[in-house]
Amino acid sequence: FLNNNRNKRSIVLDLKTRRGLEALMRLVTGADVFIQNFRPGVAERLGVGEDAIRAVSPKIVYVSISGFGEKGPYAEKPAYDPVIQGFTGLATIQAGSDEARPRLLRTILPDKLTAITASQAITAALLARERTGEGQHVRLSMLEAVMAFLWASDMGSQTFVGDEPERQEPATAFDLIYETADGYITVAALTDRQWAALARVVERLEWLEDDRFKTSALRQRNIEARLALTQEALLARPATEWLDRLTAAGVPCGPVQTRNQVIRHPQVEALGLVVETDHPAAGRLRQARVAARFSRTPPEIGRGAPRLGEHSREILAELGYTAAEIAEICPEIRT
Image: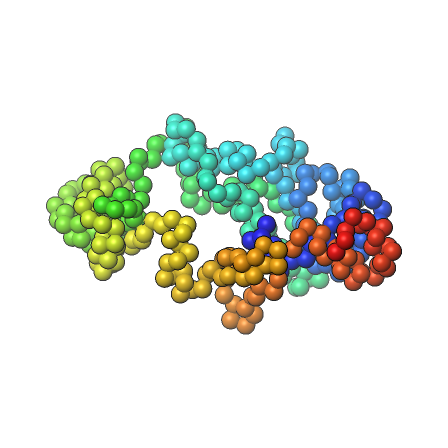
């Protein structure tokens, strides 16, 4: 919550009361975008469906986010991140083959990816409104966001109609993370030049004459043998030594870091990726800055994440409510 809600104010309203719903509608009159992520039909039952919102703000961009979309046999099903990982095939992709035990990603990718996709869609809708003068309804589900994300690479075997494999072939038991004498590194020698440079760095010149590895296509066909030989060679020296040698030879590589190492790496420090701020309730915080850097409008952290309902009275007063009315709308709030 602290990391995701900087520069925001928080208001709590009971939409099942007349006063609470009325206050929301006052907020909507000055809004560019309205976002709701209820299951299909819930927003309408609460009185905050598109028609109700557009009645008070005709040009608003109305955004509906759901788990499985608003139609189909799964439309009413609740969805959490692991449910979507399983449904979309992401867990099977992570396993490496259709035969292996499915594995969840240890980060909430569908949740975060849906939010990023929604932000992109909202930006496009706002640009369209700028050009046409009209708002619109943007519908997005976690299922749609993840499927679109996976298709460019991980669902490639399903691209050609009529030529889909019945079973996804098992991926190699190895991947591009290699163990060294004292830790792990990544190495990605993809081109002929990089492969030759790798062979020279690890002092395995015989690889250059091996018919199995003469071209990129052959190296992919013989991936098990290639990665096994690479792993065997890299066990001989410490990670830092390999990284220095590989970098000097032009072979793409990098350290495999812990979370503590990442935030203290000179490259992260050079970019100012991690910032420290003071929060009035939580104290000193370390957080990632906004990823994009703007030449004219650099983003700033103006305030930390709010407490739930922290700004309810402040916002309601801005909407023109009296102190007595505010007390009626949210009597439990003391701030």
